[in-house]
Image (tube, rainbow, N blue to C red):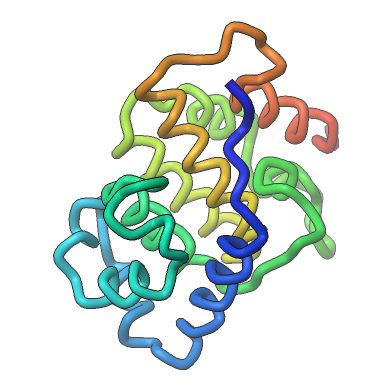
Length: 177
């Protein structure tokens, strides 16, 4: 099972929608206040998100509605997009004058071992908060979609094709003791 990858068109439209949120703070607020992806599905903000995404997302062809809702709710929490690092790497990389990684090893392990969709949603949202709202919009979207795919279909046979292993490599390779 290969990693989930967004097409160039999907990446472009996702980032365009994320920038659109700066001018539509009410929609961003609705999405940020959501305590679960299910809260998003009935909101007009989600409808606007879904309509701005590529046609392959419409009708649940490539992305299920609930998965798109989780993506919208998480991406709305990102204040600053950075292409510099993957989501998992930003959890370990020191920024500014800080001496500790944004996410402790314990919290990182808990994120990796999240047993439910609600749990991973809550932990990712908390991680974004600990990052000060700065992470990679595309990377976190691909990671969420990969996590949901593995959750429903099981992990890949080869460990190197599993999201948890990729996260661990990105995180621990950049963790400063």
